[in-house]
Length: 223
Image (tube, rainbow, N blue to C red; front, side):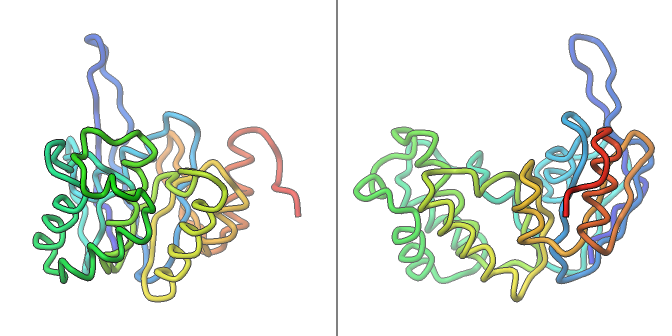
């Protein structure tokens, strides 16, 4: 279970105050893959970062009774001077998993060849995402936080990413942000719609998508 309690988040941009959330309350059940829907700029990625702990709210708190991943594919914590292998082993030690097993999994999954043993700073954006996704999927969590990560790479890599993610969902829950409604229908059974008035949880993903389309003025989702 993840419970968001009286959460508020404010930013100041060029001296202008912007409020994303004010008094947001939400409870997400354990073991359920949940789509997070909302207009562009509604705060979906920000909420994922707050739930993961890499961003602080202005007020309120997030409570969980299980382990929660960082946003899958997030590479901001990788050291630029360490190799992909060294970064992977460092993360393994932090989370208490076998470093050899994680390294073997990531090297095979990411498919970046000799670059796995070169400094992270030398990676292209695509290689960084591949490494980050592999590290994320190689560590077991109760809830995975996912932000458009299956859009990375070519078609073959995207399908491989989707298959690995689906395998993880057999034993875990997730909060998934994506603009692809077919992807959300494929992976999620429930949904949350963020609006200026707060957040609405729908136990059925089809109802969440219909609500989201109504907010956008698109009508109901096609069958």
